[in-house]
Length: 172
Length: 151
Image (cartoon, rainbow over all chains, first blue to last red; front, side):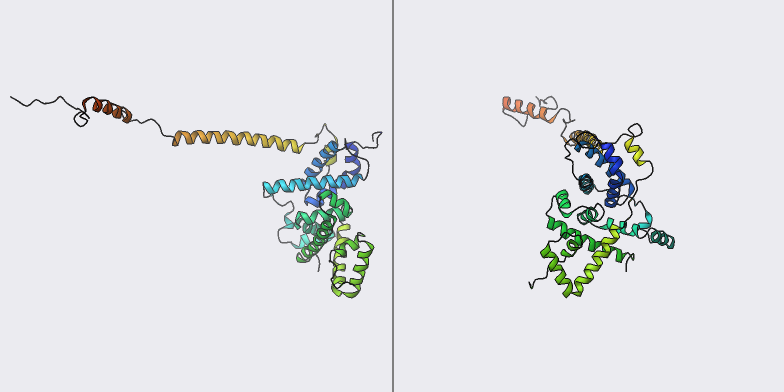
C-alpha cells in the first residue's frame, strides 16, 4: 500500500480478486469469459488507480467490472458470435446424473443458468445488488440511470429469475 | 389512503432496506390488505435469498498466479489487442477493396477497339476525303482501280 492509502493493482488483485472474479462469473456465466473480464478489469484498475480517491474499493471495482462487461456485451452485439456452451448439461435435457450433481451443488447451477438467461439490463442490477452487495445509488451511478430505474429493473429481474427457475423445474 | 396501488417494485426496495419511511408504510399497508402482494413478497424474498446464498465462485487453479506473475503471463491489454486487430482488419479490408476495384476496372472499363483499322481511323479518312471531293459515296471506300470502258 502506498503512503497515500491507494493500493497497488497487485494488492487489489490479491485482496479483492476473489470478489472481482465472483462478480465477473455471475455476470458472464462461464469461467472463460469471467477470466477475460477480470483481466480487462484489472487493466482498467491499473490505469484508474492514478486518479482513484480512497473510498469503497469494492464499490469502485464492481463499477469497473460492470462497465467492462457492458462494453463487451455491446461489442458482441455489433459482432455477434455463436459460442459453444461451456456446460452442455445446461442446454441438453438433464439426465438423472445431472440432476444429482445439480442437487448436490444446492441449485447454484440452475440459479446461474437462470441468471444467464436474463437480459443484461436486468441481470446487471440483480448481480450488483445480490452478489456484489451494492446500494441502489451505487448501481444507478455505475449504470448512469436514475435510482427509480434500478428499482424497477432489479425487481423485474428478480421476478424473471423466479419465473425462469420455476420453468426449468428448479423451483415449484 | 390513496386509491392508486403503489408500484409493485417497492417490494424489492422494501426488502433491500432502500424504501423511504413513507414507502415502507405504503408497502406494509398494501401487504396487510392484499394476498397478491404477500405472495409476491414471499416469491421475491425467496429468490433474493437464493441469490444471496450463492457460493463464491473461485477462479480456476493457476489463474491468479498467471495474473500476478508478469514472468509467467503479463496481463494482456485486451483493448490494445482489439484495436491492433481492428487496424489489421482495416488494412486487409482496404487491400481487398483496392484489388476488387482494380478487377472491376479491368473487366468493365471500355478498352481500345481491336478492329483494324480502328473505327475512329475510318471515320477520319472518310471525313477527309468527303470534304475534299465532295463525293462521299464514290470516295467512301475505293477498293480497286476504276475501270475504263472503251473505245
